Length: 217
Image 1 (cartoon, rainbow, N blue to C red):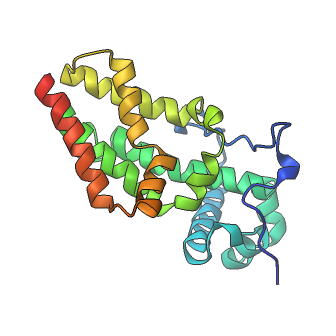
Image 2 (cartoon, helix red, strand yellow):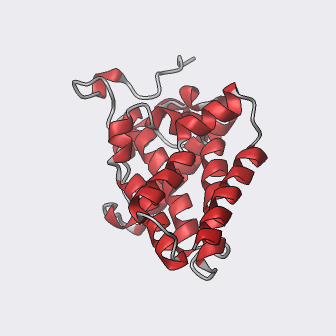
């Protein structure tokens, strides 16, 4: 039986010892043939199912190939190695969240007022990252890389846009950073697992922040 591997093999890491987990925003992804894109998506769905069932540390190239009923070489051709698979899986999950708040239905999507979208954004992020906890925790091990990632910039820009539409007071960029900090993966995980807080309590705190901004505006 294949032994569980580390999340991101250190052999692929840069000199700092951290694997670069920079995410690719949807529009920046390389174009694939339709059949290749479908196959890649299918493999990522299988990997996500295995992660949910066994934990991300037990998701190997061999396990994905077996579950998807393809040769292991197919998985290596699509992702290069296990680190590439983990990066693609993280990107896959992040794009699902991006689609929800950029083009999805209200109250998170663009057809709702700014105040409702801002209110819905916090719980969406908290629950999304909680559902994929191990993967997001691994991705946020290097905060410098996280802050400079396209995914973080997109979240920040989205919050800033909603704050401007809401006519919130203060330095919009700093307020957006503050709100995004409340949703930080490491902080949320600490509050949920170490402090014993509930998801509902974190969501209530987010609603309170948004309502205060709305009242000030």
